Image (tube, rainbow, N blue to C red; front, side, top):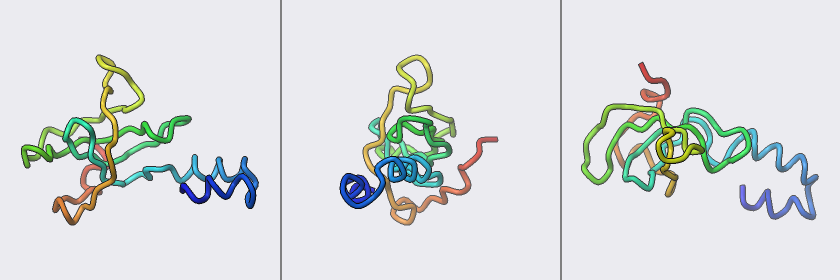
Length: 107
């Protein structure tokens, strides 16, 4: 994505490159991510205008090595509004032995 962004200035139509990145997202739906809080979550919905703040279903606490009660966190919202966390990096589902697709929808 970084290269597409960089190349869009000279090699691609910048508007189309931006639209492509918005559609695909930096963190596509189904991506397992580590949050600053130490929780792991699965991206379930991209944010309309901020590619870095999708909705995430959290499922596992990485520091404590335990599954937690799943909940949806909207990373675009602030403290007290269901957000106040941020993505540190994407993670490998194999490394954590979790199946992200199981957590795409909350019951």
